[in-house]
Image (cartoon, rainbow, N blue to C red; front, side):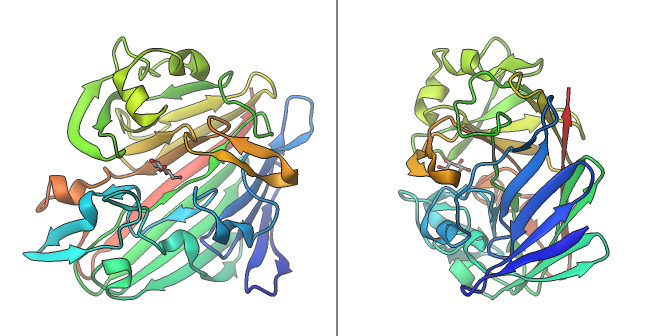
Length: 336
Ligand code: BGC
């Protein structure tokens, strides 16, 4: 069932998707996921995502809690790229680089929406040269529940060649409160991860995960991995790296022994930025509880960040005029 919960004076509408397994609140501002509730091992409903008390708070902060991110996720080097021999200059908002779509990326815009049966469809028209990106881009985000699984799918088309790399930036904490994620178990089906520089930008080089704290090919306790000494963990202040998937589905599992809640992520995207909330700064979240670093984990399925500068002619982030961008990520929540 999908229902409109609240129309707020700010123009923000809050909607709820619910069934016997899940209750998910979202808003039309940034297609943001506000709450994701599921039963724990004792049958209590737990909200497993970090966020703020009021929908308007999301406009005031960075951190992209629960938000859809676009037109391109993560960093574009020096906020510049060349497409069809023309250089484009993007809004720079993160050191020398452009992060998460620029100063006012898709996380900070109001979407139109419609409810079609069990599907909630958000629409946004990103104008030609918005934040520096070419082409009028029509984006549709679809949220729907299929039993114990929340499915997010994205479709986009542009009237000029452009670049697109959409993700969702939800911070999961399966304990149901903003506490350290150390005791969570994580599995990532990735043999390689991408190396980052001191700005968090991918360099184009990869490292094998073997015998390193990046090896989550079998489930590992996050805290034990995080505490290991590794240059890339120091540079990133924790995990803040693209993990390249080895399989085409069921790539990530996160589990909290405390609540027994397990999250299974499956996507048709080639990788995920795994981000251990390294820059949460004690700001107040839901119920006035402060959120500190490592109190959530983002599993941002996407294509390779900055790929347009690494592979200017062949990048999978290029969306040709009239072609369709399509991606899908599903989030299954159940008790183990
Ligand atoms: C990035 C981080 C950044 C964060 C902002 C993540 O996707 O990889 O470097 O600080 O988003 O919340």
